[in-house]
Image 1 (tube, helix red, strand yellow):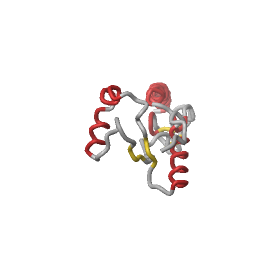
Image 2 (spheres, rainbow, N blue to C red; image 1 turned 90 degrees about the horizontal axis):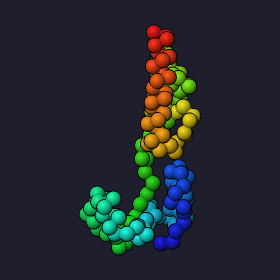
Image 3 (tube, rainbow, N blue to C red; image 1 turned 90 degrees about the vertical axis):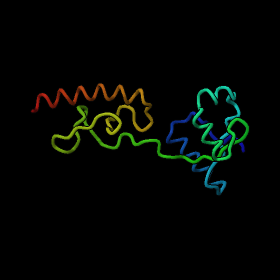
Image 4 (tube, one colour; image 1 turned 30 degrees about the vertical axis):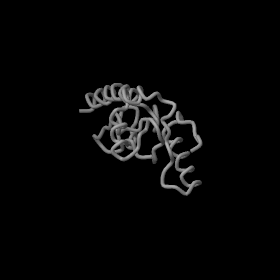
Amino acid sequence: MERFVDELLPRDMLTEKIRDQMKADDMPYVWLSMAPIPKETILGHFPNIYAHCLEEGYDVTRECIPVVPAQHYFMGGIKVDKNSHTSMNRLYAVGETACNGVHGANRLASNSLLESLVFAKRAAQKIGKEF
């Protein structure tokens, strides 16, 4: 029940630290405390999490909950060039699926939206010239 990591680390680094702690403790989870967050904030900003945890027998406003790292979503799996072209003829990938080297695996949603706009335009211009 002691803090072991800076929760604001990038997702991949935080996951690694959590897994290291789980291994060190020989436990299938770590404990998450929401104690620093006022009850009103939890109820206002996280009502679904609060309700689900209550259904599971945990009151996050008064006690820790067991958590494990999970795959939030897949990002950046398909390698593309600066025009979003993949290694396959006539196949382009844009947005969350593309690995264009701009933001890497820890980008936030707003970054991927920006990437989608920029790289979709580049892909469209390239496709327009080729076909």
